[in-house]
Length: 480
Image (tube, rainbow, N blue to C red; front, side, top):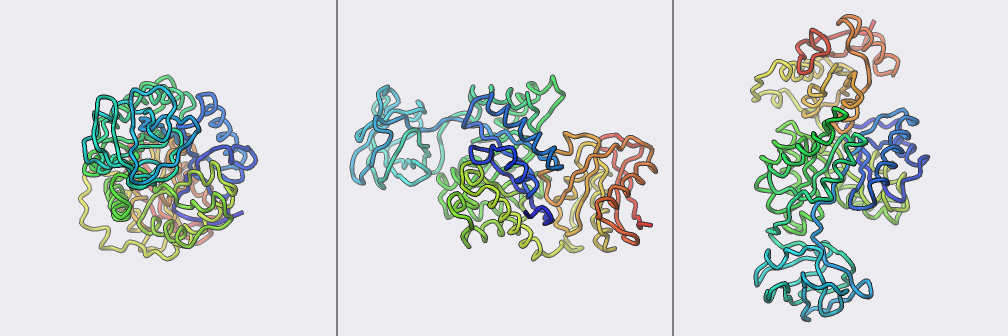
């Protein structure tokens, strides 16, 4: 196992049939999983509740707190079902999408889960089905029926997704099912909620309001992740980021809508913008796809993961690789190795990168001061004593090879920080007086072999202790 490999980039793994064994999940967490994703597109509320409980127990046994991310299904923009489960569409042949059809589909037509499609498309539009593998061109719209010609054929099976090239489908980001799923996720206090297909800040603000209301009984407020997968979301990225705690570069649906060739540059832009705005960013979709069936990744996949790391992503995500693949543990091991190797090749951000930023808050200035000073003095660690996790988040936005240890008295904060790049969250009671808390922090570092006698480390805290947003002190310590 690779639990000894230290890396800054975090790993998000999706739980599914292949990884729902408690012993295997414990090994995956020990090996490097930082965030466990529950995909609400599959399963019932009880399934997710049981899996969340299993994650917490496996985390406890592994001795590592992880975050749970509830990923909402979003609108079902899909075709209906077929009488034989699938059809083989031929290029040049007509094929109809009928919102009113109740009977199973065949080679001529199929019903729609997404009933609004006839109102959303126009003659000449290009529709992409099954992640863009099948291409249809709209010939005419007659009432509930969208008549198309097959441009690129192939096998089309039940409930495959539909995208309109260039975007423009009007489905709301939050469905009635999503609203019920938010209640389920808040019942087990999911640390993050990922919102599928948001178009603007309003979608994210509505999701936050629903989460906060549903979590009020537990005084729980999750982090909100906007999945960027619609063409309309790209020009509104800044407003979506302001309304979110982070974004996911969801390269599957996004690539279908904007074209494969546009995605790499968009990925770099999204990662850069998220970091500049003090938000987290997850890079997702097909990162280690071949490991669903093979024990080793392709060289292209290794480069893909490494490039996301070098771009500065907080986390890289595994979907079917750990949910349904043959090698879930091996995939996590390989990804951890790739992340560590890519990080070893990075340069630290130099002095010039600390300049040019206007800091209007004391706590932010202390965070930047800790990075700058620790970098110049060759400190072995930076310690942030934090109630809300904000200080650790700000520190994590700068690329620096000194590990950041975030000490917090709140387990919810510890779990939320599990996704922050280069942050190792630890639970510690920080309510004591300052000197006692600082001494306890050094004991933690020494017990974990992070520092030894003679080493320097930087530590930030607030006076008086235990007040959110109160970080106002930076101290440089030498271990005695």
